[in-house]
Each structure stands twice: as structure tokens, then as C-alpha cells.
Image (cartoon, rainbow, N blue to C red):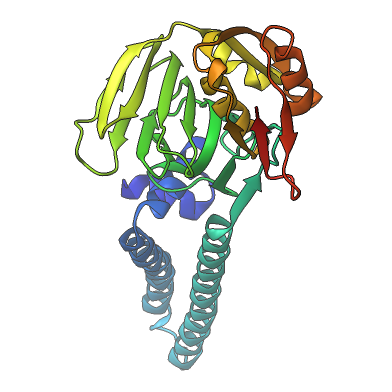
Length: 320
């Protein structure tokens, strides 16, 4: 950080952009905090030195006057006392500012979405996030430091506010996604082995946490899936899949078993398909999530012959 910017900040004449630059620099590493305190002490010392030079000039001019030395030295001592009080006040102010800022930065929020629901929220940097059913995200009350970082368990759609100085990182159990500003979807439920990231705008870098696969840089209209420990890139062929943000489950010519897996994620329930005749059945359509699982299964019965029932504690649905 340039000393000129720090001194303008100390004087209270720094622009908003300069103040924000100082805050970001201060949050980068603890060493910067110590440097800021050292520069503040030096800044105060310069001010004090300037006052002392003024007093010295007065002292030399008054040495010709008899018995004036005592008054001058007393004045200097009083000035030093005042300067000491000011220095202590400034140091205490910086200490409490840093402490309060650290507490604010340390404050983490956790949002959990119930089965069958979805949530939309805006983060402190202006990034918009949609969270699908049974998802959980941990994020800071205020972003600070060199990166904007969140943790996701589940599925989320992100419209990241662009900031080239502070990359946005989504941490999941399987992979991390890093961006500057873009629109993308992440599906990474910790209770399944599946992971995918789909890019609509901008670019993202996907890194396998196991460090087995080489990081992948996605282009718009591409998606990546983690399969057998490898990151595989392909083109997005169906954007209706991401209409869960509108409260819809959309599907086109997919296997019945695959649709049931989607329902499991959405409603947080186990679905056991015991009817062997459904193994070759493919289906298309859309359902509103809020209408519930039973409604969807009854509609599907119009084209496929099966029955379904729940167990006593309502955790498993058997399709027979």
C-alpha cells in the first residue's frame, strides 16, 4: 500500500475508493495490520515533530528574554502530554476498529432450505443466489480479504457481482468453483456422489478437491460432471433442467429411475422402484414442486401402470 494513500486516510481526506482500497489491503494479511499501526505512529510522530519545531523556533526567539526558559519548557511538556493522549486515543481507536471489523468478518451465516422449498437471497457484495431444496450454504456477513468465499452443500444458482480484484469461490465437498463475475449452476449434494457445474455466462474454473483431475475452465453453454474421479466437460442440451428456480421440475425423455432420483433430492425421501416394468419407461413433462410428490406420481400413473405407498415413518416410497 502506498504511504501517500495511507497518510490521506489518516488525515481523513481519502476518497471512498482509497478507503476501500485500505480496507481490502488491511484484510489481506495480519502483517498489513501491523504495518498500518507502525505508519500511524510515524504519521503522528511527524505531526508532533512539526509542533516541536514551531516551539523550538519560539524558544530561540525568546531566549533573549530573561527567565523565559521555564515557561517554554513547561509549554513543551504540556504539548508532549497532549500529543501522548492523542496518540493513545488514535491507537485505541484503531485497535477497537480492527477488533470490531474482525468480529464482523468472522460472523458467518448459515441458510438451510427445507425439502420441497427454494430460497433466493442477495449477498453483501451484490451477488444473487438461488438455493434449491435440501441445500445449505455458509457465507460471511461481510466479504473481506482477497477472495469472496462461500460453502455449498446442495444445489445453487449464482449470479456473481463482477469484481476483478476479489474472485468468488464456491467450496463444495467434491470440487471448488472460482469466478470473477458470471452466471452458473452448481449441484453438489454431499449425500450423493454426483457433482456438476453448468455455465450460462462468463467463465469459471472448476478444481477437483482430490487433486486427481486437472482443473477445468468452462466456457458459456458448457457443463462439467465429476464421474469416476474425472471432470468431464460437455455442452448443455437442456436449460429446462435449471427451471427449479421457478419452482418447477422439468424433464424430457429421461428414464423413470432418473426422474425418481430427482424427486429424492427435491423432497428428501427415498424412493424404491420395485416394478421391473418401469426399467424401460421414459417420460417427459414438468411438475410444480409445491404440488408435492404424491401429485406427481399420480399424474405419471396415467401413462405407466404402477402403485405406490409410503412406509409408516414416511421416509420411503415404494413403487410397485
